[in-house]
Image 1 (cartoon, rainbow, N blue to C red):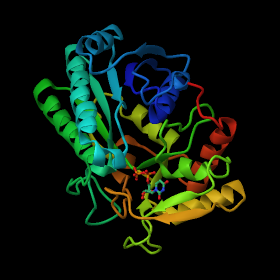
Image 2: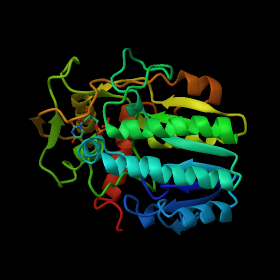
Image 3: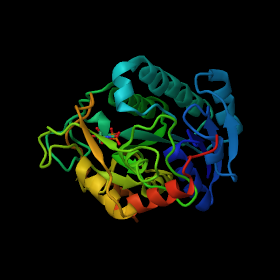
Amino acid sequence: MKVFVTGGAGYIGSVCVEELLNAGHDVTVFDNLTEGHRSAVDKRAVFVLARASDVETITAAVRHAKADAVVHFAANAQVGESMTNPGKYFRNNVCNGLNLLDAAVAAGVKKFVFSSTCATYGPPDRVPMTEDLPQRPINPYGESKLMFEKMLHWYRQIHGLEFVAFRYFNAAGASEKFGEHHRVETHLIPNILQVPLGRADHVEIFGTDYPTPDGTCIRDYIHIIDLAQAHILALPAGRQGFYNLGNGDGYSVRQVIHVCEKTVGRPIPTVEKPRRAGDPPKLVASAEKAAHELGWKPRYPKLEQIVAHAWRWHQAHPDGYPD
Ligand code: UDP
């Protein structure tokens, strides 16, 4: 298929583009490079440097690509930042996304695959979390993604645009070529690995008084290649709906630090800090729906494998991408 990928120069997008190409699809990457990196774009893909806020350009780009499917990664995705600058999140994740949605309809695209998030649920009533849980986000990031999910529902009903929305839990790890390099890094695993890389002397733990066994937040970490594979499974006609993507295993912040220590073979000093605004205590997925309906099966479900691949990539790219 011809697949149009927004945010294909970003962390999750770059690995998904690589996997789409490996699976034989033709890929056009559309990215403004504010979060992404030019060298994270697989050389086999066509690259369009432009902004989704520019309606004419994005409309022409989707049409020119003759896209059968759109895979939409481009977004802002930091919970903490969304609590201080909500407008950035609603403008980019909702308004700019809407430009893409209209462009997809205008170009006769058959399938829209959307990067949603477990942050659309807010603190869950129970874990593991299934897709039917109520969605009550507690930060503007999660709210912006939920708004886009609702738009997808109406665009399918009114325009017949088939969609799959994946609610990611915590993406982590790397492929051999592509990994995690945010210009401002806020995510746990890359922040921990800064210490053994010699770029930080400790990692901060945000909150040690949560109602969890060791007092730190619990998350479900999922290998970036496994996330990418799910997008390929979403492409065939008839596949449609909302799916959680996680491993069903919860790890606390302290447990993740411990796995990193074992992987790198040395202690990683920590400093305890107050809670970060907008963080739910525990998010763990049930991804049984994706397993049953899409045939999705994670290849790297163990946190040890995920951290090992992240560490391999960071060692090979201690400065991240050059651009
Ligand atoms: N966290 C932390 N120190 C860091 C980065 C993150 O303690 O340097 C915590 C954060 O508060 C959350 C968990 O690690 O409880 C996962 O955070 P991350 O930003 O990686 O992903 P999120 O779950 O927010 O999408």
